[in-house]
Length: 318
Image 1 (cartoon, rainbow, N blue to C red):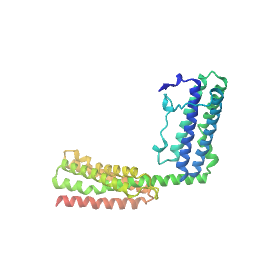
Image 2: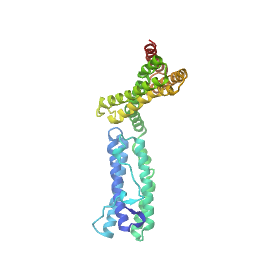
Image 3: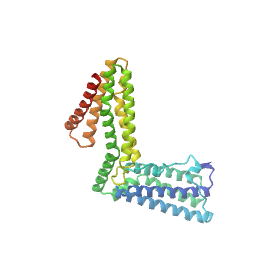
Image 4: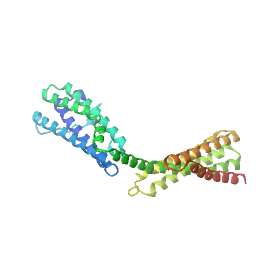
């Protein structure tokens, strides 16, 4: 790996060509990844990919004029301190906001590269092209917003926002809510049954910990294996399973941790307070994201939680 200030003009041009090709492919990947759900925004990134291709051709023409036909392969990762971009395949599922912000960052970084490269060049034609490209990239920092205004009417933008909201509900909120409800409600019975049966905080904590982790693993696998998301649009199964399993464990751990308090009745009071907070959060999520009327959500969740809580107390006290 070499420092940027050690590169020759020939190597700088080769690096610029590689950068433009990589940026163009990233924008093309954005367009392909968004085309199914956000076709108007995909068109924006397809146009940006075309513009990067035009820059690459200008650089290649100048390189051939100055240094001949062979262009050495010099990549970002070969130059110390140069910009690095997260691979698109690691960013899926793609969202509109993430891709637009990434585009703005890429253009700003590329602008700085051209500015530094132009200051180091002694050849007038190379310096001019690099300076011109720096100016273009400076304008491109806001190109995503400008192209959206030109290509995405307000009605289409609203539709894309609704689509993004629907995907967020399917891929994040639903598995998370299912896990939180299962963890918060299903572990009530074993935790409080153990507490009343033994009268010892530590025993209740051990049972609650085991129930929470076990439920998290079970729910995570169940969610991940339920479908692969190809038809339902629910996203990657491992991501849904991870969200569901984590939220299940979190829901059970919440009212388990108070039993670390040695005083049994103090631990019991804190645990009951935590349960009330958990049920309130679940009710709020159902109202906020699932369009359930607030009173109906509170009654449904509260009634179910009360039944399970009473079951645990009755079994533990028997």
